[in-house]
Image 1 (cartoon, one colour):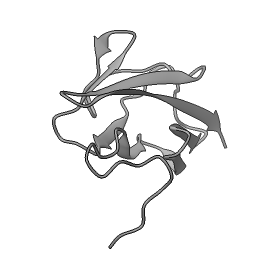
Image 2 (cartoon, helix red, strand yellow):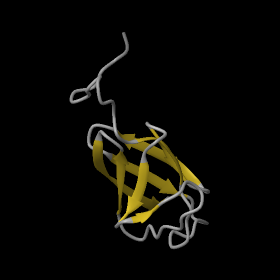
Image 3 (spheres, helix red, strand yellow):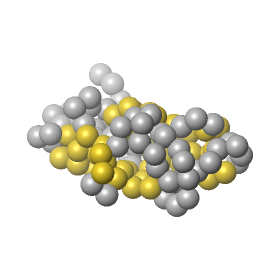
Image 4 (tube, helix red, strand yellow):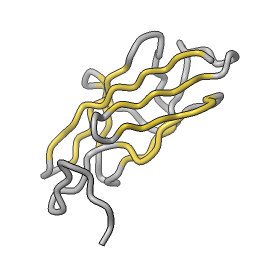
Length: 104
C-alpha cells in the first residue's frame, strides 16, 4: 500500500497538479497539503509573459483562472503577483491552488 497524506480520500483521489513549471524556472516546490506552488525563476524570465506547463492528477480536470480556461504550455499568465488556479474534476469537486513565483 502506498503512502497516504492527511486528508486524502481513496474514493475521490487528490485534486491538483502533479507537476508545474515554465521555461527558465530554476526550481519548483509543490505543497500538496496546502495547495501551494513556489517557483524560483531565472533572471532572464519575463514574468509578465509566461506560458506555464502543468499536468493535473486527473486527466479529465479543467484548469482556470478567474473563469478563464488555462491550457498547459498555451495560456499566458502574468506572475507579477501570486496567481490562483482553480482545478475542477467532474463529479468530484474543485480546489484552489496558489502559485507564487519569485526571481532568483
